[in-house]
Amino acid sequence: MILKIHENAKNFIKNIMKNQNKRFLKISLKNKGCGGKSYDFSLLNDEETTNKNFEVVPIDEDFFIVIEMKDLLFLFGSEIILKESILEKKLDIINSNEQGRCGCGKSFI
Image 1 (cartoon, rainbow, N blue to C red):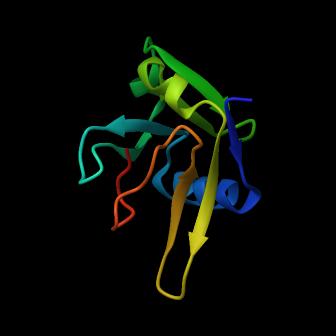
Image 2: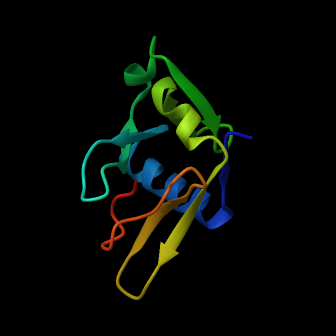
């Protein structure tokens, strides 16, 4: 399994995608933050995924997560969870390939 997506995270992702009229959530790694790398989430439409070198992970029959091949090995086996507090809901990734996270929690090594 490439990614494990917790049920509450699936529902959160699908609601956002429905509201934005998008079918694809792209997860990628960016070089930024005090830890050196961070996760980037972006919504894509069908045309933005055509002829791209993506691994496609189904959320259900209508919605999908796409990962660029260059990021696939690092994300393999990760879990997508939903973190909730009184003020916000946000996706997070539990990834055993991380060596550590920075103090603010927004980037990792």
